[in-house]
Picture (cartoon, rainbow, N blue to C red):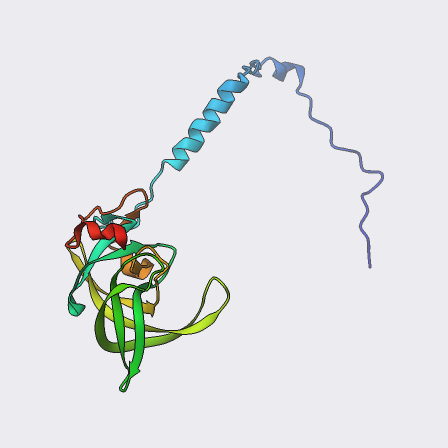
Length: 214
């Protein structure tokens, strides 16, 4: 392998000195104006703020969305249920509804006792309505305690405010929860925005003050 070394007899480049007759033609150098450190900081900050304030328009603006609270009353028209208490939870992907019993039926159907209201949180006394419908899927889920079990999911129409849409709900016992129903991201997006500081933004619903016992 050949290694290249700088030539020893090579002289370093020296700056060319202008001749005396050319020095008179050169413009006089102006002293640099000193800038205050605070002024430099203000200028840099203004540039950063200007960059942050730029908005890139990539498409048409989003349609207006409905703001709801963390707890609302919803209607399930296919099951004849009005004013059931639902919690809007953006941390959950799918929704769930409180059931007291589950009985699988032939032909991929399920019969369950839908809990409309409970006498107290964690109590056994409940107002139940029997519903039978088709099973959309079965999923293996794991609880926060590490236990895993099968969960059945069904599909129905939900009416929230003036909007209606079809959503998927898991059948689960929620007797230790405040609300009988849970609305996840799949049910909320893209029509709704959740304000965690508010509740009942769409009104108290048909069940009135019984919400406080749910």
